[in-house]
Image (cartoon, rainbow, N blue to C red):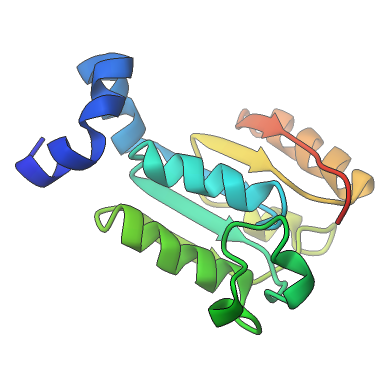
Amino acid sequence: MNEQEKQRFGGVERLHGKDGFTRLQNAHVCVIGVGGVGSWAVEALARSGVGEITLIDADDVCVTNINRQIHAITETIGQEKISAMANRIQSINPDCKVHQKPAFFMQSTAEKLLETHYDFVIDAIDSLKHKALLISLCKEKNINIITVGGAGG
């Protein structure tokens, strides 16, 4: 770990140990749904030193997101959520590789969006039908999945 990484992520390494932190740096995590739940998950991943993050969402930031989404501020209104979040990740961890996929996860896009190897997928999708599809496909493909939900959006 270089000096800048020590300053940014020394606490994470002390918490998880050198091997644990190395696993985070080498991990590729995909977050599907970058809104009220997903944006906070992405923020935590970036601040934990995760080395590669794929963001999947086709929505734009709007003023009504400001009360609950971390990337939603006056300056990002109208931007793609994945773009606003990617900029935030780079400000936190410039070494993180960020991939942006402007799409909604649904039957017609599912296979294409899951063709990349991910160590983990975080499901922050609003639709129960699409959550069930994602969980089923991740299980079928032996992809680790964390599913979460929220209310109020």
